[in-house]
Image (cartoon, rainbow, N blue to C red; front, side, top):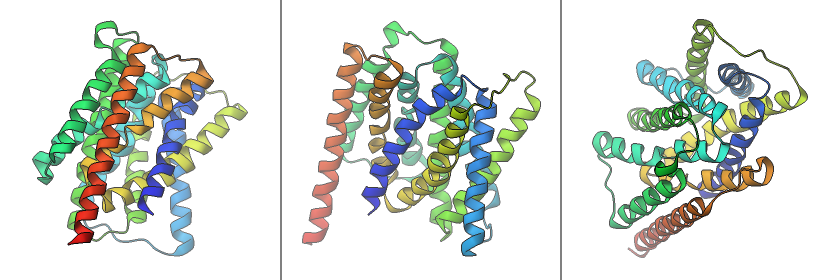
Length: 292
């Protein structure tokens, strides 16, 4: 069942980049981050109240840090990057996250990296190089910079989430609710102290985008992400999530006219092959465990 949830999450998150890109025509990056997180946080807490299931906080500092990295940093930097960068290219830069998360997981969590995973890492890395095209950067420097900050913030949050889940048998729904709440506070403070904000036009599309991003991509999405992290190793989850920007490239090509060039196509092929290596490696190891 966890793999079904992962596929659903990949589809939901891939299209959220296209929606966010269009939504930023009607509002500023920080306001959009604030609105989607506010809607998502309210939805999560209403659900928790309805089922009367929430745990007390034991690792307050870690949960605050999780909210500031997984929600505040990730969303604000991602949306700032989308202002001048294409949805497909920005999502791919942000999905350098697996390489950062593997580094943090290896250093802090002491997770091992198998030979097949190393091959997949190398293949994915070269795939991203072809897609990003550092020899011919088309997006602005600030867009790329913010995208990488978003990737690093997300990678740090993965390690923090694993530390929390390893220390405390915490319900994932409660953990998601708390991290979203603290992340919302972080975004609100950014909105409060950053002077310039683009005027918001509350169109029907912006309302749709906020509801989709807030409830489906944020509330449900982060809950599924934490649940998947609880059930699977960081390395496998992080590398497999590279399927998201591949779908985003196709979706932004169809809807936004962001046509991939030959280098991006080569990069997509390399990443797909790397993902196949991961799944074959995972399948073989599962079969070996069952056999023994």
